[in-house]
Length: 122
Image (cartoon, rainbow, N blue to C red; front, side, top):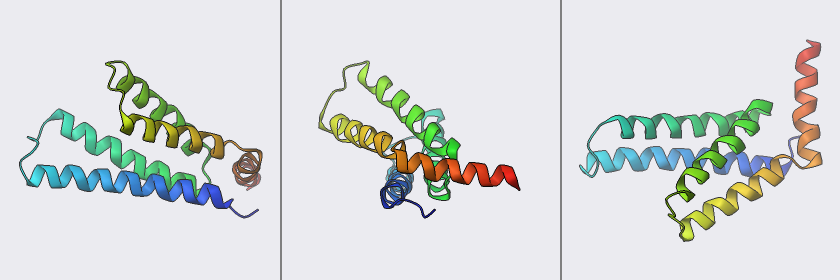
């Protein structure tokens, strides 16, 4: 079964999101906006994980879609707690909701489970 087009689009958008975030952190460090420290290191690790998860979704790894939806839900929940509710929150929250629905559509489930069952046969 071919990868559904919507899964491809979501996977690449996740890879691009993580890559731009890594570039943004690097640029901010070079402009001395941030001082190197634990929060910057955590930002690098988190966004590197987002890139890895995006490529995992493109490969059809079951764990990748679960980690993406669970991880991004946790991030949005932490952002919502101090009431940092703004248009960016709505944008990324909407993207998370749309990607969660798309990644767990019946056609997407068939794609991810087919890959998992063929790996178990080998």
